[in-house]
Image 1 (cartoon, rainbow, N blue to C red):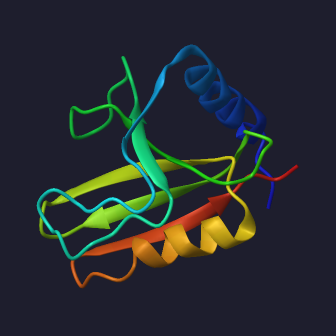
Image 2 (cartoon, rainbow, N blue to C red):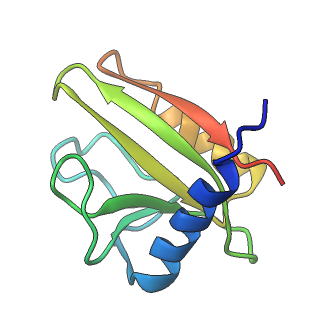
Length: 119
């Protein structure tokens, strides 16, 4: 079901990403600083100069697709931290997207849902 404001929502996300510097602080293959058994399978970082619900920069996954566009987001809920968040998927292939979604659903404390951009 397409809603009237979808185009504006995605356009605003595009604008924020275009205006911001992407900082990859957890490159593909690196380990989580608090949970060393967790390895990042796709580049992960944040948008410098932005803020999300946790007071940090907006989270972004940067995939292997040469064309860097936002194709989807993942909304997460974390019962351990008692928070919610969105993660931008930027330049992600279907395989990247599947991997990232699985990552957000492998913990008993966090779950995520994928929202795809209609084109």
